[in-house]
Image 1: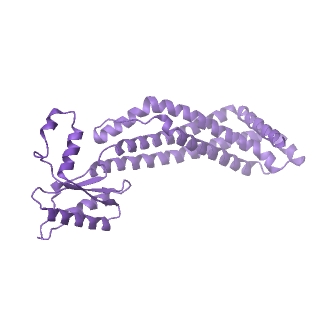
Image 2: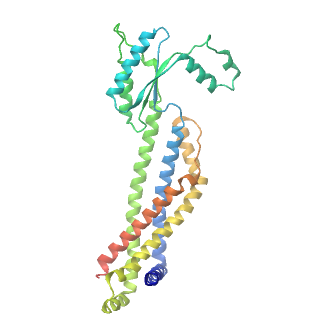
Image 3: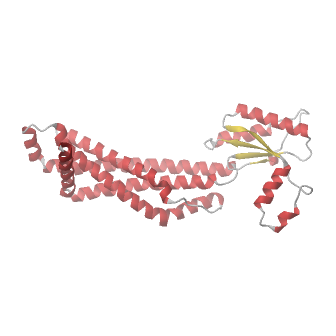
Length: 318
């Protein structure tokens, strides 16, 4: 019961401190709210853009089409050369996948199964060519991905001729470059803004707690004379910072939901359309709620505890 009474006392004193300096407390909440909303919004934009482009077929796949005039021996020779490239470039995953012209036709007919003209093609009338598919890591740098194309173009057959021309190589490296560039830019901007607002939040909460310390200076001095421990004096002020941080986190989750539902969908749609011209699928907010809750609470607790500790260390002198 003692710990329960102690918890109740600290919570009561922390709430009193917040209402005693209501203007500064409100400013602390608003600054922290801005910080969390910016962090959460950039997170949701990046995640949704990545999820949408993960749905794009062959985004990180390079297709090497085999000329129709090549023999089976030459096709196998190209396959062996591509396996050698896998050994040279660690960003490539798995191994080259051979896709026959029959399998390409099957994919083609599945893709356009709703079109009547797709029934005109069959195994006897198949204009498609066999190919090899090479998959590179989704975290690869664009310069590393471009090296794959260069190596493929340098493959020579046993007769000394180049195996494939640049027109025989199909890839979405340009699209991959756009996606990677936008994600990196958003991440960098988001981290910078989060850092700036977090520092501002620390200073505002510190000032709020310093006002509380000043307002209770006589009470604090009396407690010290009566033998109160440092922890007993510090805890209510730390609780005040934690309450501000957690309240800001809870408020941010609600505001983020409204932004996600009514604003963010348009932002993600415009970014995705600008890159690829395609539509988007926005994942449900509930899918991201656990991550956002942990993220916001972590930011709120960090800001509350750090600012409270610094304020007390510098100004309380206990």
